[in-house]
Image: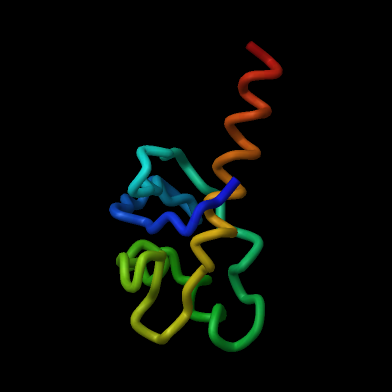
Length: 89
């Protein structure tokens, strides 16, 4: 469960995937391809070079054009991925 955690670090992995690290140590790869082209603000993300230019601003993943992904969404994606891994282990 997300507890107002902030993104502390990101690293471009490939395509539309970022490695995201939260301030509580939760981290992992997050596929953000579902946002690419989703409305005008996310249209520039179609360009992988632009997507890779993401930075951390105000505790979440952001791009220069003002696009961002809510930190709770990123956190939930990581928690879901971790739970799936636990089930298959």
